[in-house]
Amino acid sequence: MARQKVALECLSYHATAAQDDTEKLQNAEIPEASKFELYSFDFSDIHLTDDETCMCVIRMFKEFNFLEKFRIPQQLKLYSLSFAMNMQVMCRYVLSVKKNYRPVKYHNWRHALTVAQTMFAMLKTGKMEQFMNDLEMLGLLVACLSHDLDHRGTNNSFQTKTDSPLALLYSTSTMEHHHFDQCVMILSQDSNNIFQMLSPEEYRRVMRVVEQAILSTDMAMYFKKKNQFLQLTDNGEFDWQTEEKKELLCGMMMTACDVSAIAKPWEVQHEVAKLVADEFFEQGDLEKLKLNEQPVAMMDREKKDELPQMQVGFINAICLPLYKVTAFEIDMT
Image 1 (cartoon, rainbow, N blue to C red):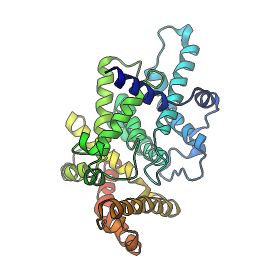
Image 2: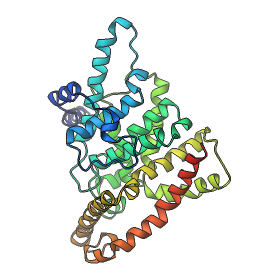
Image 3: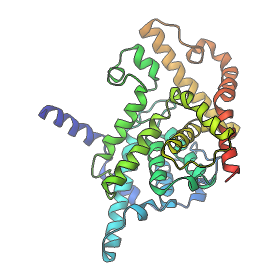
Image 4: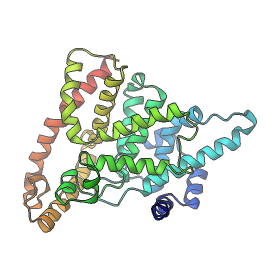
């Protein structure tokens, strides 16, 4: 047990952002949302520096007033000090999340930022925030930032086929469970815990939102629940306040955000598609090398000429049906 605790302490230390990086972000002037086009669905991270990606996250939290709503000091005279301390925790949290993404081609920190920004735009510009309370919106933003933490560039099927330690630990939604565990690990450090001022009940509720939202990014989960969502919307359902319906709505929103690159301007969509293909091809190469198996077409670089056709199939099967009903919900609000 002692050895395990030491190992966890070491892991937590190396997974947490450095103090000097935290202070640099804390002291930086955070630009207005308009500079980064955070309210636009055309947002792109392509031309942003690494520092600016973190500033985008801070600005989104500020636009929701989360620092004030969930960090209200007990005494007014302590406000300046309390806000400064809260800001430091916020900055360290963002940098720690960024640090825990691996430098894979697609499922990396910048993808997480894009997903979080799309959620921000859906809630703000798309007015979906009317269906959510503050805790739920906080949970969704954290879930988006965390939904691919420590992604290795390989999918659940690969984990299962290779009998990876993760697959032995989680029999279903392998990577998604791992992403959530990494999220919990980061938040378990007081220096990163942006939920530290929540009551026990609020903490339970927000972590429930985070967990369910991250698990919903497993495409297998999406296919399992999409018909239920489509049936509700076809029947004119606009009341999403029951717990079951709210989780269903949040799950569909997470998927819509996760694949949102497909709805970006062509130059952005084209660039992201190349990154996705590169990562898929690398997994395909591993399957040939380690498993002596022929990968599926989208992961076989020898079939790269079929990518445009496969991309259209992906859009028609997953993206269009989801975006049509989501847009309808927004139009009816």
